Length: 440
Image (cartoon, rainbow, N blue to C red; front, side, top):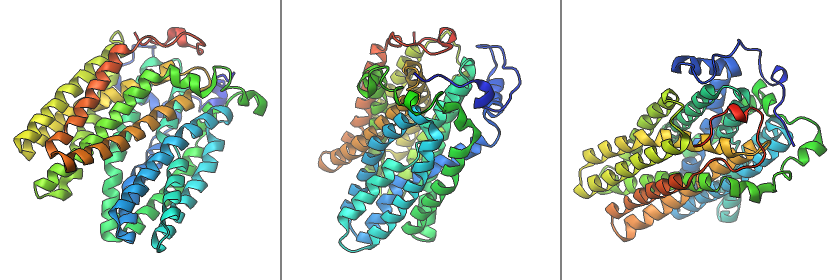
């Protein structure tokens, strides 16, 4: 079984930690660059930006070069499917051999896959090659967000308040990147072409992905021992099937979050199209990301006696109220009311994401944290794909208002999973767990 490496070899030397559990918010966030080094925050953010550019970039690239929106949608779905399969694979390998080795393979493979996508999209009749390149791109794209969370969990293992700050920051970074990434694609595609936008994403993977892989914090995730020892780390707790069972509630919860994201995107696209302003769908959706980012950063200020299960239920209930208001606003036909409802819903998105990832980390068995985090992130990707396709189908075949019912269903599912959440499954306990906060 793998164990957390000694601190002297896993991170830069740092000042003495603040009193556990009682650090003020500002101190908690100030600890992040102390633990990881000042360069880590910008490097990790820039390294995840290309990932947020790839889905919409692939859609625009293939649609424009082949004059087929349907093929563009298939290519985008292939990218999502590749991510859903490749993400957990990256996590499992990172648990066995460390993140650096995995990332130094994924970065060049992903860069080549994106270049292959650009070339195949320009070739007439190369549908199979386009879909294959899109799937390879999604599968090999570095899982920066989940792997960064694993680094924080290792670096701040005995500082619960710092872990909360790190999870809050990571959720905010994800939100900002998924607002900024598509916007950057739009700017580059308008100023140049979709090819320019996708090639920029490839360049970002090559440069910032490599920087993330080579950053000293990667040493914190390197298992003790050599190959044979590392190779048995996944078998000790029953393998992937056991991990899925252990994280089942979290996976369903994150699938519901993806369903909410994808359904909202599709519904807003249909609504703005009906309102005669189709280009504003992204801007309206960005309103959700702004509120989500702000409240995600605020989670660290919540009292630690407020357990994760209670937080999950409270924030999920807030999402249910917000999405119900979104349906009413859409039914009223007022775009302004919809924007207000989107903003209100977004206030609960960030806290839910922070809570879900924190619970995932709490429930992950020793030596399987990267597997758990990438598995949870992949559940979100699958949910987004289901939500986007389902919401689009509802909007086209029933009505635009009916498409807004999908986020409500997602919020209900989140409430149900929150109610069913229990303490972390009994079994192997990680070093320092006795001092860590339990789920309930």
